[in-house]
Image 1 (tube, helix red, strand yellow):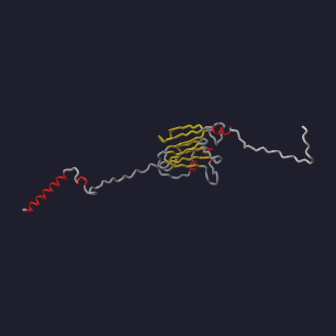
Image 2 (cartoon, rainbow, N blue to C red):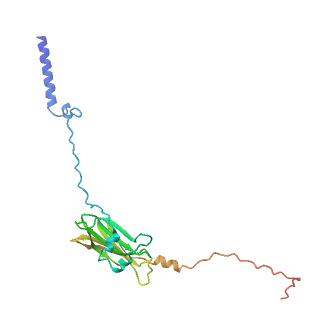
Image 3 (cartoon, rainbow, N blue to C red):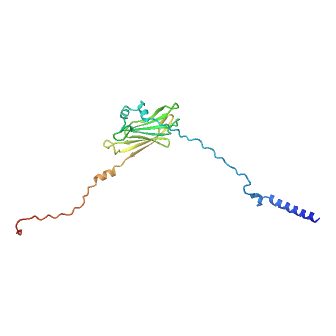
Length: 227
């Protein structure tokens, strides 16, 4: 009888403990043992491949020589300046969305290193390059800026030396409908104030200490001046 009573009391206490835990609130069941719940893991998806087309090196001089759109004057002046080095700058980048990187070529003169022509070549599906832009004016230079073609041309007045243009035109082109269209234009006028002020300032000479004349030697005694 004693053992049975003890067992009943134990079962009643266990039942009350279970009821207290199952009512929600702040029992140990809410937190649970550390690490008992599976952790959801998100597998990072691979980012899509970049849109930059592959760069395929080209012979820029050969492109220019075989391009009928290159002017005769530029083609005749396309000669090595020293040894076998041609005055040609080449840039690769994404301008037209072609299968390969577009090529921007700037041709300069050997005498004064001023660019005389800018050209853009686009790769076709068969690998051949086609001239899609050309500008042949003195002091023109093309660059690639975040997918845009930026062409800068120096502006000269009638009396401007080659080293001092009066201003510049900066034109931004974007590829649309299989051709480049002008997107933005900026004109810059260069100031002559500082340059002119330097020439107007008088030249200051350093002070010179006065020099006393040396006495002239004489053979006889010096006579007093009667005046």
